[in-house]
Length: 314
View 1 (cartoon, rainbow, N blue to C red):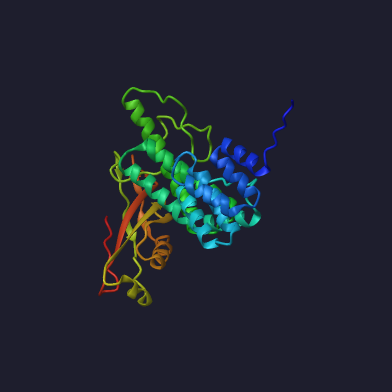
View 2 (spheres, rainbow, N blue to C red; view 1 turned 90 degrees about the horizontal axis):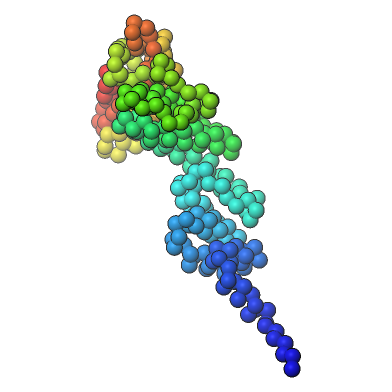
């Protein structure tokens, strides 16, 4: 006797879902517009697996947006972009409005993410960790390229790019010298900031010199006027001093080629300071009796009461 077994559609679907990867199940629920169920499934997965958490968070943002919970979706997107600015969302599942949401978040967060990456690279240079510095400044360049792709307009970022390229060359040259000093040859070519096929050799000088490098005489001030804090910004001190750390590149002619705020004190004052710094003038740094480019770092301290006081290391 032949017996036919017919499973109800809901039971068959449940069996199929159970056999699937949990993330794939959530994706299928999202694709079928079962946003509440998909969100519930994703919430259960949240934080369970670090390897898949990025994908889980993406789809959580998709579901929240589809349910009209835009603020929550934006918060998830901000966390994702903050953790991985080069994040590529699943374009096959993302609607144009979701893509626009992530693009807006990137445009808003990218300037600070780039500056944070630049600060990390600068710290690695100061620690003489040249390998890490190369990685950090290489990432700065990638982030700047991404910023350009999404149409981010921030005048200060062009200066960051020039400084990052200079520091990358400096780190490459320093790492190469270190390898030679210990009798090692580089195991693989070092990437150049603008040309991956260009490899610095031992005879190549760094593009930018810094204090403490052998045989380098630091530049001398000719004109270095630090602007006063505008009266309308004084209340922003809130009874405490603020410090701005400024990196400037002084060219071989003694003029300031680039000025970048590495640590912000008062953002509006920082912009004024950076603009003023480009008019400063120095006797250029010297190396082997020839003028060279030089990186100078300044601390500008604004204190309560006077409206402005400054500490400028020589």
